[in-house]
Image (tube, rainbow, N blue to C red):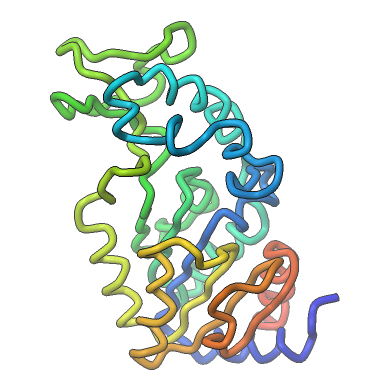
Length: 251
């Protein structure tokens, strides 16, 4: 049961905010059928990330990464946005949400409509659907490259092709982290949804926003290591919580 008093407290914060920044982690997409890679039975139990998701190993033998990625490709490609993604896009349309910072590569925020009404989207770990050559840096769309019938795709320059996602040991996309942190300094409200806040540097965001005076709303199925920072912590399904929040806000 979702705490109704806390729901109304969070709705009031949202109503009184004009520069909301949303920070999302893997938990927002589990309701779209994409399991958290770190959860029991998740991807990292089947594929050791220090090998299969390592940039160094990719440069030595990309076939390991692509073996894992083909499973991810099917999972992410079939996923649709859930009510949480849709509600965040609706809050943007209402003029509330000005930026979305996400650790996810699934592009479900964009599929739901985020960014359509001017919000900035910061993909901390890259984005699904784009590929590039690690040698010449040429970019490709997924439908331009055969990834299914080969051990790994190669560019015409002989370089290895990889999705534009961040592997372990690889730098974050240039300017993305800086832009995301700057958004947190401008926020009057930061909504953290579906993140355990265990991974750096993403877990700096709540502290930065709080330091600059933002109200913090946490939405997650489990407690986080930063719960003491939250003005309101809503425990439960992100889709259900966002649906109820919109009802209160629009009433």
